[in-house]
Length: 88
Image (tube, rainbow, N blue to C red; front, side, top):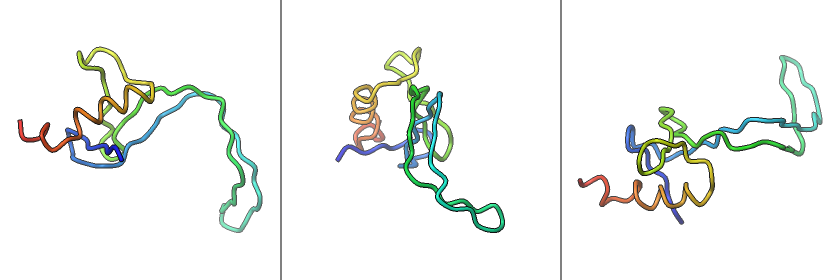
């Protein structure tokens, strides 16, 4: 399993931020604005990948472009999330 580790705060939870249309079925409505949701559908593009804790955005090796593809995230994690990277 490839793991994510934020180089800024060391958090291990990664968030995919998307733009576009997202829909889901509401299967029930309870008191106090509590909703139950069914299946989720998305017609959206990835805007960025970021640390869920601090918002650190994954950038390419030149720190010029935001990473948006799954393969770029995998490569970024292999380089930046290893223990060897943090020993530098």
